[in-house]
Length: 323
Image (tube, rainbow, N blue to C red; front, top):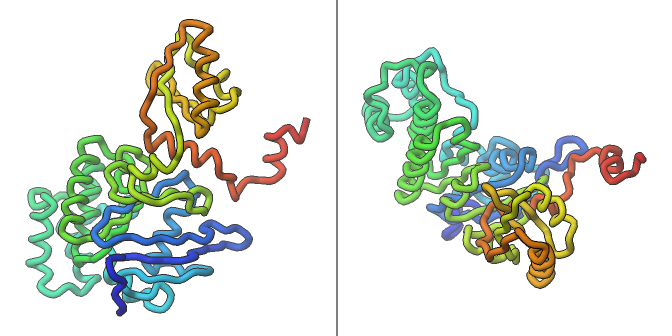
């Protein structure tokens, strides 16, 4: 095993094709040790496929790199033993108790002193009081906690979380993220896919994928700064009608409804300001400087990226090719 400095993961040119479809296209990533690294992107963008290639579950069509110092092409078996992988769908046995599920996982990994480790895990994840409860009777938040406990039972060095908080209530999400940051503080590296912008802001590093392409990566603050977007908050009596008009004006790259107002963004600050001044002079429109959010950045990026799965014939119809 070759250690890779401060990087837990370093991959170059990662590509995966299924038939004539390229679902991950030339992705290069560097994930620092002990980071909480977020993968964002629309459905079908290649996030889960990337995770599976990195952790040895899927062989890349092209590319190379290391994960935890192991070669992702020739040492996939070694990588798997060092990784905890939590899928979006609850994947434990619903007709077994909490303790029985964890005991089964411990046997799969042939853990020494499994009984002691099981008790430690139950206590660490606040599951001791529910250890005799059937997994199928747990709420979404407690199923999530049990899944995380099962992933951590064999004490991995890398944790992969595929949309782990989908379908759980806000308090359970908050508690889950507090646990994740505690694990990262103890030295664990975490890769997580999410659609929630508040969760993205909790990550120390982010990568945004759209239709197989890696568009940007960095910390949340730098990604907002690098976007080059200027944002204004606009309020009007008829915001919906104003949004339609604004989208047709030069300098306006993004219009999104926020409460009773609009977030209006553009990369050309001068043209954007001119467009907003024009509508403001018509009256009953208020324009104030705003703060560009991660959501603004990612919606803008998604709009700039072509869908690699789009049907050419349907694309021509959308552009007026079938009049």
